[in-house]
Each structure stands twice: as C-alpha cells, then as structure tokens.
Image (cartoon, rainbow, N blue to C red):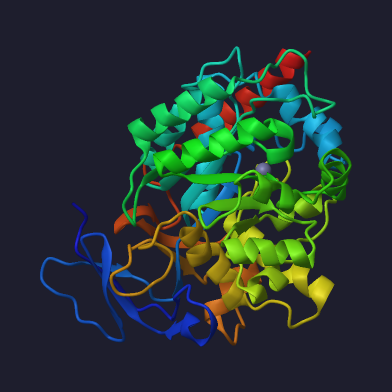
Length: 458
Ligand SMILES: [Zn+2]
C-alpha cells in the first residue's frame, strides 16, 4: 500500500500531453493508492497526508524508455568500437562480449543502467536483452526483474536473441543460435512467470528477436509472431538502422525492410521498432496505417553515424513515437534527459527551427512510450493516472535565467537535480539519492567488472 501524498509548490507541471494541454502551470498534485487523485493550485494538506515539498521544482511524468540493452552498461567506450559504424561496432563490442556475462556482471551492469535512468527521472524501462544462446542459460535475464524491483521501476523484458544467424557475416562462430522451439518455449515460460496485464503493470514480457532480417528465417519470424499473439504479448526489434540494412533487404528479398515485416506478420499496434532511420514515405505510411511504433534513439544513431530518423514526419503522419536510450555501448549517456534534449536538437539541425518542440519531445518520451507498451494508465500527469513523477529541482546554474521553467530540464540538459522520483506513488528517489544504493560500492564493482571483461579477452 502506498502513502497518501501531497506534492506541493511546484513552479510548473508538464502533463506529457501534446500541444497546449502540455502545460498545467504551477500546481500541486495529490496522490492516493498510487494514482493521481487531484491536480490544482494551492491544495491544502489533509490529515494523514505526507507533504513533499516541490518548491523551486518542475514536475514531469516519469520517462518511459522503450529501448535499452542494460548489459552494455559495462561496455562504454570500448576502444575498438568507438569510431566504428554499426557493423564494425557490433563485431568489436557486443559480439565480442555478449557471451561473457555471468549473473554477477549482468547484475552490476543492470544496476548501473537503471540507477542512471532513475536519476534522470525515468520510471519505466524496456530492456532489449539478447544474451540467449544455444549453449547459454535461458534464465540469466530473469535477474533483471529483481534488479528493477529493487529500484521500484516498471520493467519490460524484451526477450531477444536469434534463431538463425546465417545472414550475419561477422557473427562469432562460437555462439550458436537457439531453435525456434526453445526460443518460443522460453518466451512462454517468462510470460507465465513475470508478465502482468494491467494498465499500470510493473512487469511485462515482449517477444523481441534482435532484428527481423538477420535473427530468424522467414518461417521462424512468422512462428514467433503467431506465438507472441497467442500469448497476448507485444513484439519489438531493431529495424532499418543503417542504409546497408535497407540495401541488404533489397538484394536478398527484393523488398524494403518494412515491407518484409508486413509480409511476415511483424507490423501492428502491438509492435514497435528501434531506430527506423532509413525508411521512405511509403514505409512511414505502412507503419502508420498498421499502428506500428518507433523507439527513437538519436544518440546511438549519431554515435554510430547511422543518420537521423525522420521522426517529425512520422509524428505528423500519426505514427506512434517513443524515445529510447539504446545500450550504453553505443550511447554512453544512457539517460532520458540527454536523449530528449538531443531529439529536440537534432531534428532542428536537419529540418529547421520548427521541426520539434520540447512539449512534443516530452510527449514522445512519456505517454508515447507508455502507449507502445500498452500501459494505458501511465505516461501523463492527469487525474486517475499512475503517480509516476519526476520532480526536477532547478538549483543548478544551468537553469538560472529561464523565462520558461517548465522547459528547463530538457533545454538545460546535463545530469538533472532530482528532488523526487515517484513510481506508482512510491518515493524511490529523494533529494537526489536512491536511498538503498551504495553508489561508491557500485563504482568499485563497475571498475572490477570492466577489469574482468578486459582480462577475459586477453
Ligand atoms: Zn538497440
């Protein structure tokens, strides 16, 4: 049972709704049973209510990160991959290290990644976890749910991996893919054990082979889609991250990647893709028609030199848009404030000063993400919605001199100063601190983890 709370004195509240409805002005927020009970000016404290002081702060809905690879939080700036495009980077970093993770390393990496996210005001994380191999232990990723629970965050395990790797020229020979039967059975096991179905579910499972064109055969892809829909879970993958990917689809299958997904039952309102950097107008129309969404990951796309996804066009067409930080191995600042700020900037560089607004970007990163995950009671600050809140303190000089404090956390960028973070009405960050987490001990564990991974390769 969560406390009765009154968040009082915020300078500004951004609702996560698009357009003019984004601004709720200076307001207090009353919370009951994990939901928002009232939003309005000058609410009086009621008996038994704990008052949280939000003076000097602005309040956003908690961010919903729809694409991550938490294991990569121990693989930042690997030298051989730092100046590589996608394929060279995959060979130099994930492919090299992905079967070296044991429970201890994965737990350390996930703790780093989720701490970073939570301290940027992120309250939901979908992790595309793909450390599943023929010779591996399918239950390794289960511990991610435990780590997320420690943080009190909503967590979505997108069960990755491959059932076929023939198309990947640089894929290491020592790693063999799993059979479709084993993959499907494990997704069923995970769903039975962890998947919750409510509009504010804390735990979900998603069918998520690493990428449709390289991780499964045509038949396997159809079977996995049918299996996901039988189980009533969502589907996720990487798609059209680079121009080479599109070329490969044309040469191998004589069609565009989004067409290939349509042919193999991988489009729909229950599907979202990371990247979609290289898609044309016809593909955007097909994605929009089918309600298929995007996890826009601009930092990783910039870092790997992949390009810039045409997200303003997608949003204008009515396609569901969300934001993802992607793994820290290709996006070393894996926090939602950095991602949102870059999303705001990069489309302006490409499309002019009216290409994005802060309100749009906040909507994509909050309600946009919750919508794609089917979390219908998450992602906006409105009465009746889950009390997932990021309370930003504007006490750093980068926020001083602001005409519009509501926009300061995104425009100011950098590491935010968190007064509070709440998930489902539970206070999980207080005065910038995750109370149970020993940050110095985590720093030491991280350094030991990196040393171990380096030794393994020596
Ligand atoms: Zn990714």
